[in-house]
Amino acid sequence: MAKSGKPKVSRNKELIRGVGRFSRSKMYHKRGIWAIKEKNGGSFPQHDKQQPQPKSVEKAPKFYPAEDEPKPLINKRKPKTTKLRSSITPGTVLILLAGRFKGKRVVFLKQLESGLLLITGPFKSNGVPIRRVNQAYVIATSTKIDISTVDASKFTDKYFAKEVVRKKKTESEFFEAEKEGNNSLPVEKKEDQKVLDAVLLQIVESIPDLKQYLSARFTLRSGMKPHELVF
Image 1 (cartoon, rainbow, N blue to C red):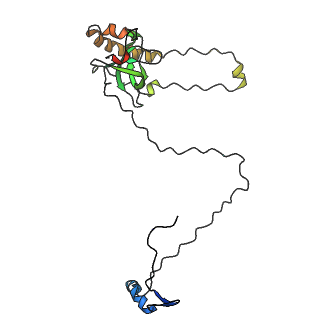
Image 2 (image 1 turned 135 degrees about the horizontal axis):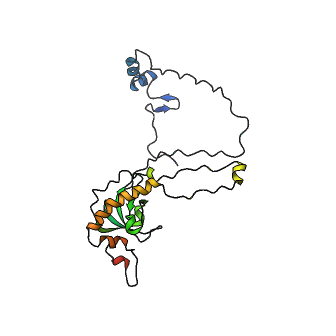
Image 3 (image 1 turned 90 degrees about the vertical axis):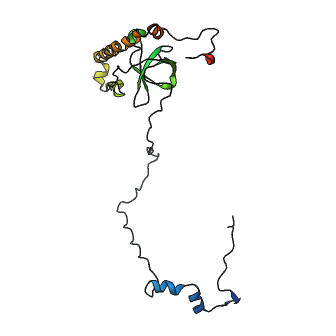
């Protein structure tokens, strides 16, 4: 594409070919070259010459790999904490929509650093232990209880981390018939559940019909319209 705009016109128009309107001395003053020399002590400013960069000692490889080696991409993205819904506050009764305890009503304790919700049944009431849930798979109800006396500071994302067990690699150990122990819950976590349930059950039992409400499973029956329900 041709550049748009006015064409460049010389200051010294040619009268005939090779003969300009102004002389060289006239154009010298007209272009202001004398002022540039005067500022720089009677000579044109000169830039320092760039020093040549030293040549690399390492030579390029003579042969290249047949297949391209994958290089990991640089990820500069910093994860942000998930924004909690305004309807979910500590003490809110939630309804689980997916997973093993689908349809159960649970009590929301706090939001963890990963953005997941820390919930519990309590376990004695409906069998739901302390666990983490994504807020996309819960319905927040209008039922709320005061859990200011419940201490959940011990429960973090590291609390739920699984222990990494190295797999057996040697041939002798591979063929040995060893019975691995059952993946039972540690005694410490069972005690933590009992301590939390003891405080939470006192709050639940103080409110009439709340214990029966938490133990009942939420289901849709014939004639019920989900879009008209008020939780």
